[in-house]
Amino acid sequence: MTPAALDYVAASSLEETLDALADGDASVLAGGQSLVLDVIHRDGHCHRVVDINRVAEFAGLVEADGMLRVAPLVRHRTFETDAVGGGLGNLLRVVVSHIGHPPIRARGTMIGSLAYAHPAAEWPVVATILGAELDLVGPDGCRTVAAERFFTGPFSTVRRREELLAEVRLPLLPAGTGAGFAEQRLPQAKFAEAAAMAAVTVTDGLVSAAAIGLVNAGPCPIRARAAEDVLIGSTFCDAAITEAAEAAATLDAAPSGSESDQRRQRRALKVLARRALTQARDGW
Image (cartoon, rainbow, N blue to C red):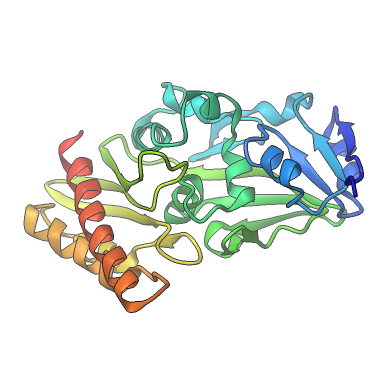
């Protein structure tokens, strides 16, 4: 039997968007890089697509009060430029170069990636390790959720279907923050099998702040706090990097599968964390 056609709504304002989402039977179209595939395979379980590309207020990217405010239509490729400065800009430029390929980065959006919550996606881990805040707007108004509480599992978040993920706020980082990213990806794969990222600030020769994340290393994005604790106060030497990478792989990572699969993934994550941290130290 031929599946029923989807309704299509081209919203022109926040109010029209929320009206179209109100019955919980719709999906939002911004870049469409994941949604279109779901529609083709009928995996989205919705009967309406709400296109928000005409909503001018959804295109904002603003630095204010120590935060970078990202709206729903800010494309991945925006972060390839100098649109964001300082340490946060360094991290975003390092990470975005690993997302898909140029056509994907030209259409896909950061907020779309956060809402989709793919376990191997990069932006959910960035939001988690930086302690980002996410605004969800729905019939009952706006609620703010910390990134670490937003993701509940693979392709799963606390967002209700009638809500719009309307903004993410990322804290700005000091200009002296080094950033690194390393991944293990099969040549033909769309997503990395595993990856690690790091943003590390050195003050007066010692690590004063560290944010380390693991991609596809558990059911939710992982902030490697044990690894961060190893680095804080160190001279960011090779020994500290090796110890932090070991902690990330053995204490922070939560791989699934058989014991041999888990051992293999932990070995990969240890190597990737060490590479990301070395890049963060030597790249700035």
